[in-house]
Image (cartoon, rainbow, N blue to C red; front, side, top):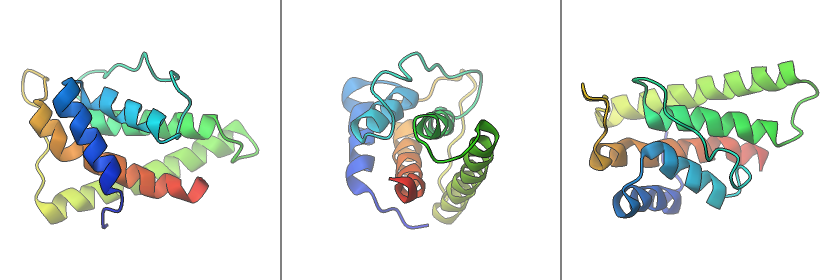
Length: 136
């Protein structure tokens, strides 16, 4: 998959480095700025456990995106759409990592360095935007 949203990637990277915030916060702020979700709806989002913050935030943004739009006739249908789209996004992220040899693993202490998040978070945002662009 080719990356198509350089401004969004740069914005996420800039947030990580200048504000020294987590990748979760950087992606949520970028989603607010791009109008994917309404301002403030994910302000209390916290990363649970040892998962990738970028992937976790992307999944939550995706869920909230569909919650705030009338794209399905029922909650069950909406959840199927979210699950299908998340599967595509996760596959694209995996393929991108494999193609570029991008290693993104959580260190033993669970704290990511902003430079490490800077490798993955902008890519996650780009791929998320590509998939959500179909519904905008």
